[in-house]
Image 1 (cartoon, rainbow, N blue to C red):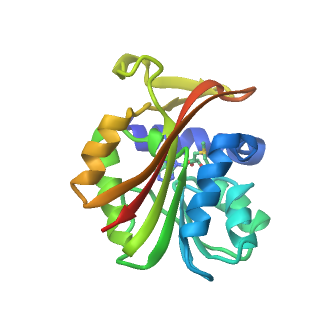
Image 2: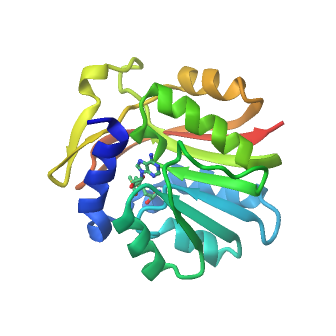
Length: 210
Ligand SMILES: C[S@@+](CC[C@H](N)C(=O)[O-])C[C@H]1O[C@@H](n2cnc3c(N)ncnc32)[C@H](O)[C@@H]1O
């Protein structure tokens, strides 16, 4: 089974049973606030893998942004529509979006780690295309604890569901996004732990389209 199908199946099953713990994490919230502060008033924001919409789609709406949210999972989109009816939704993979210079900001909170390297490059290119000139991109994912990824360890189980999850290091992210003329304006890290996801080495990257 390809990894997009595997992950769709897993997240369809998980649905609203999990809410992101990251809004409670200090550094995560700091970089999220910085992202929001760099956006113009009433900015258009793409939530790149919105999950159930809680808490981040809701938070983006609360801060006055015009939010478009996508997710590969039908269940997640259904949940998010219930939880945050103010946003506009599309059930589509990050690798298949077709927006052109439509957004002031893109929020990708723990979603691009669901992609292998090829699909990461494809969706990064599409995301940059979807951003307006000067647009800001918030990217949060895990980095490998010892710096280097081990492909054999990229299959994991979350809430009993087998899925693909690949940590990316800073160099890999710089390499991909510099090709698309994205300037990195902030990098931060924090080690966190939660019941659902266990120990995670969060890598937070804020970028701007040149
Ligand atoms: C860990 S959750 C994060 C949800 C949300 N961004 C948050 O911060 O709470 C990962 C989400 O990414 C979605 N996802 C996984 N692969 C995707 C893909 N190829 N395209 C779009 N969404 C995807 C999953 O369905 C799931 O809702």
